[in-house]
Amino acid sequence: MEEYENIIDLKEFNNKRVLIKEIFEEPLVDVELAGWLYDSRDLGKIKFLILKDISGQVQVTGVKGKVSDDVLKIMDKISRESVIYVKGKVINSKQAPGGKEVIPEQIEILANAEELPIDVTDFSKTELPKRLDYRFLDLHRKKIQAIFKIQSTIMQAYREFMIKEGAIEAVFPSIISSSSEGGTDLFEVKYFNKKAFLSQSCQLYKQMVACSMEKVFTIFTVWRAEKHNTVRHLNEARQLDYEQAFADEFVVMDVLSRAVQYIVKKVLELNKKELEILEVKLKVPDVKYLTFAEVKKIMEKEGVHCEEDDLGTDAEKKLGELFPDTIVFVHDWPLSGKPFYIMPKGNGLSRGFDAIYQGMEISSGGQRIHIPELLEERLKANNLDPKNFKSYIDSFRYGAPPHAGWGIGLERLTMLILGIKNIREVIMFPRDRDRLTP
Image 1 (tube, one colour):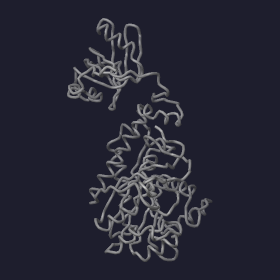
Image 2 (cartoon, rainbow, N blue to C red; image 1 turned 30 degrees about the vertical axis):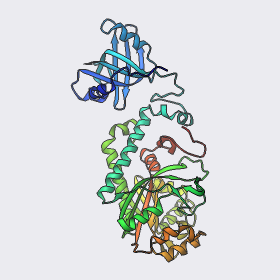
Image 3 (cartoon, helix red, strand yellow; image 1 turned 90 degrees about the vertical axis):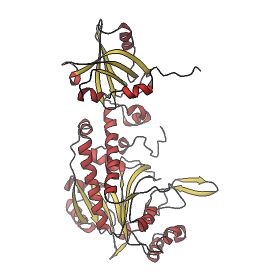
Image 4 (tube, rainbow, N blue to C red; image 1 turned 45 degrees about the vertical axis):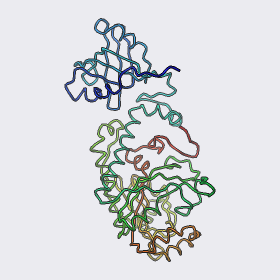
């Protein structure tokens, strides 16, 4: 095979490259661009290309007699989504989208695109499963890019908020020796000559860190082996996790509400264009606190069934209808409906809570048990062997303060902020019970 040679000097090009959006923001004349061919038209003596990069689109216009024949020949043979380099002059044009166009002096095809297996236009009617089969192509679409630009803002805003709160960012292990939360739905992995599992939560580790460093946060990948197949669940997801020492459930509920409000404000500030593309009318959420018992009474009046220790999907949807654009904290949760590490409150209640936003749970949290003897008691009550949690329990024997925390599903928060109906739309490469590729 012949050694590959770059058609253009990439180092030199990167020093000169202009992003398309800059053409419409600055008084530029001579430009060098690179991107993908979004569309083309041939009107005989005039040829049009619509070039796109991550920042926008611009029309490239070749007029016979004003542009070289070599350039016109190349314009003839460029297939859709091929990667091209364009050197030319920017001129004002009332007919061109945005009022400016580029007259090409040189065009090079950097990577030719074969026939596309899916429609990647902004009006694509390709069904989601097939789009996910070709997700690398689906990411060429403006709407899909808008989703992930917003998700990037969500993650960065979360980090900004937590740093302002005085929290440290930590990294936790993804391979564990036993269940983090007491369930059996774990992905087993071979770890040398031992049995291990992919972590379904960083819960136990963030508690250990909070008990020495007071405030800790992370963006953590979790794996859940449940065989569900819904529009709101994944088998691999990301969580925005937080834990704080010297805090009860109400302290961290306040932190959670301010974190989500900060995130939404940042999206409104930084992603106006993306929100327009997705046709999303976003509002900074209000906050409301209700006990589990109060929610059950509301649901009885609304004719919606609740379990004794869980709300259920219908009750969450109804809360979203009754309190739109509001984070509803449901606290004083029945102890039987919460994990073993949630602090009991007495009378069969716990210091656990759920946060419901836009009709769906975005977070579950509460005050944790920091007393070793009580923790052992609660493990046994949940049919778990304290021996499997020895290092976790022992971490509270040497001066562990009261502490509390929560986790927010990144994909679920993205889905609800943008009003998207299927969570697979808001993860670049979904992992569910049927999908391991791409």
